Image 1 (cartoon, rainbow, N blue to C red):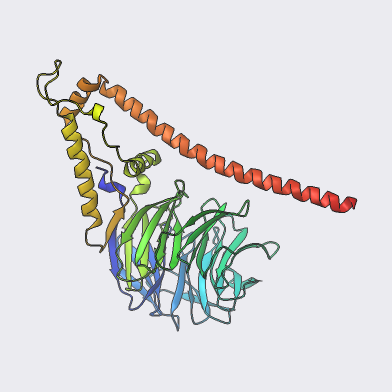
Image 2: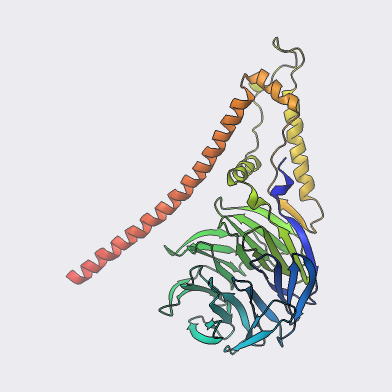
Length: 446
């Protein structure tokens, strides 16, 4: 059976907000967690050591978004009162107010160096601010409806935004122009962000989907429809290998982006989940919802070597086939053993135990439980190894070596598959460029 340490588990359940929790973010030092709510409050929860939380009440209406600066010395919030505030996350809670939007401000995000802020609002604009000089710098306009989210790329050169006009746009901070627009969503786009390397973006929509694009070739790479209701928020794991989503179907889901599959479904909130984020190093993630709760989870699975995860997924999705009649051995002792052979019955017991365990896990009380795709079958007792060696003639050390080789081949196979996909997309892009050049030459010659 797979170790329980592979699965995420609930660490803290914070209750202090009096209404829907709209946003969550970890201090980069992992000692604090900031949350915002419809109750007009920003709260700073002290995790290490776990002491009394700070409650900041400067906004005059619901607080929609929160984000810590890279240094952790400032925290920014955006509100329905059309303002953005910068706070010091200590007991004093001093704040500075930025005003430039003419409608509800729904999103706030620091650049990676902490020198700039980007905000998105219902006035259909995205604005960039200088945090040190505390002044407005520039505005991006191109959306035709409320802008729900805006985020800086890791290098600060680009900004991505999403809107109720069903588009996701990428903006160049130097030219101040929109350089690409994605229109694949069939509903409003609620949230968008860059992956840690800045090569891809992911968006969450009211069409119950999550979409990932490669912005180097401007193509849709992956499409997930694992939720049964609107997807409200998402967050990339710092490794870039995993993505977590929060939905109005009351669940959190974790996707394996390299494999392109669902890893975990998490239940804990008693209503729609509005916000989710990984900590800066990925060891924790936090979620907030309409039940006014803030849940902090231990990631766990990110500490397991990726080839072990692949092995577990292979076992979960490729059960052993039914035995052929020629594979069933007689129930009489073999000449080279002193007692009856028991390998088959032990293997069957182990397989049944694994199935029963999975069924029990999936039927547990959904409150704060994790439902994974399954678990690795447990091995039998030590005697089974020696019986297996007697039966097959393969020493345990050789079997372990062969198993390790198979794992490595699985990893290589998946890697080659991903590379082939990327090569195909690159070839398509190159062919498109060649066709455009030929068309341009024909136009010139005519």
